Image 1 (spheres, rainbow, N blue to C red):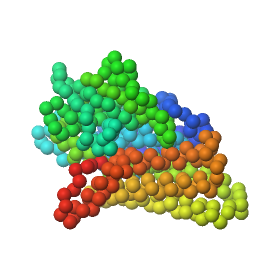
Image 2: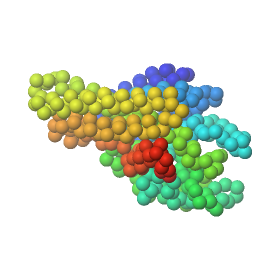
Image 3: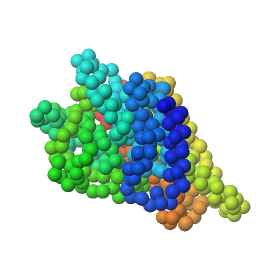
Image 4: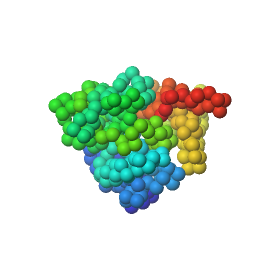
Length: 388
C-alpha cells in the first residue's frame, strides 16, 4: 500500500462523512467506527517508517503526501481529521529525530521498533498541554517519579485530543531528581477514568470548535509512563518534529477552508445578481484569502522539502494561515447572512473549526515569541527559550 492508494481510500471515506455532515457537525463525541475505517484504509501507516512497512521515508519525501491525506479527510469531518493528524504528528518525534548520541543509539533504536510496531494498528495522540502553561511544554508542572524500574506520572493535563480513542498519548513531565522536562508516553488502552488506576477525568471537552475531538482534561496520579529514550534532549526532539507537525495541522484547516468556500460558492452561484456591493467585495476578499492560505500551505511544505532549517518558515506560514482562515470564514458568514448562526448551517461550525489552528501548538502568544526571537537572532540577540 502506498500513499497514493491511501489518499484515494481516505477520499472515499471523507465523501461518506460529508454526506452525513449535518448530523456530524452536531456531534460532541467521536465514533470509533470512523477510526476503524481509517485504519483499514491504511491511514495509520502515515506514522510508520517505510522500512517497517509504513508510508514515511523522511520529512522531505513524505510530509506532503501525509498532509494531502489529512487535507482530503478534513473535507468530510473536521474533528476526525484533527484527531487523526495527531497520529503522524506525535510519531514524528521518532520519525524526525535529531542526531542520536552514540550512548543512546541502541536504546533509541529499540524504542523506535517498540513504538512503530503497534502504530500501524493503534492510534497515537497527545495530552501535553497544561492549564497555566501558555502552551509552553517547558513550563510543565507534572512530575515523573521512578519506581520498580519505571516512571510514574502525576499532574493535570488538558486538550487530550482523541481521549478514549487514542491508544497511546505523548506528554511531558519533569523527571525525579532533574530540573528540565522531558517527553514521555502513556498507554491509555482499557484504563478507566474514575481514578482507580491513576487516571481521572477532570472535564469533558466542550469546545466551540472541533467539538467532537474529545479533547478532555485528565488528572494523572502515579500513572505508568515510558520516557523517550533520548533523555535530556526534549528540546531537540521538539525542534526536529515541529515543522512537520505545523504542516499537518495546517493541512486540516486548509481542507476545512476549501470545503466552506466550495459550499458558499455553490450557494452564491444560485443568486449572483442578488449580492449587494458590500457582499460582492466580501466574497471576493474571502476567495482571495482562501487562495493565500493555500499559497502559505505550499510555502510551508516547500520549506520542509528544501530547507535544512524550515522551522521559522513553517511557523510563519501556520500563523498566516490561522489569520487567513478565520478571516475568510468570517467574510463568508457576512455574505451569507444571519442564517449562518443556525446550528443547521455548516458555516458557523466551520468558522469555529478553523480558529483551532491559531491555538494549536504553538498557540498565538508562544508562536509570536518564537518568531520574534528568531528574527532577532541574526543581530546577536539570544533566541527565546520558548520552543514549539
